[in-house]
Length: 111
Image 1: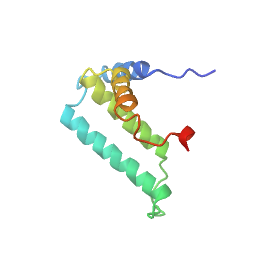
Image 2: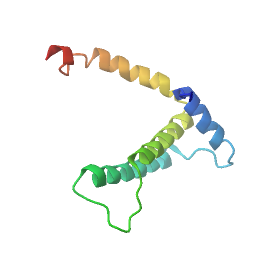
Image 3: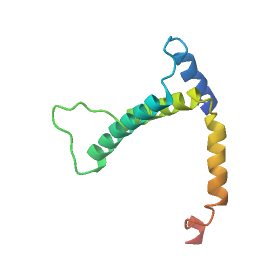
Image 4: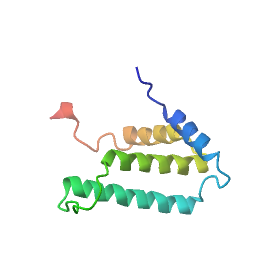
């Protein structure tokens, strides 16, 4: 049975990896630029798979899953560098969705 990692475990794993290098985490601005770069790569893959722009024959196949993984890694680096617990950040957002936005969308049981 494979073990599913918690967000805390993901953050700890990335921190352990980054901590082996003298350079450590990039600055927040550099990380934001990296996140933007990774988002562009994800957008390109989605556009190739679901949009009107097929890949050129010489372009290698890169999975959306891999691009999402890259985005997640940079997001975790960003959070770690700013000492943000992503589980707590997630809980804050879910509270917001469950209060402020609770009546914004049509629930399935209301159809």
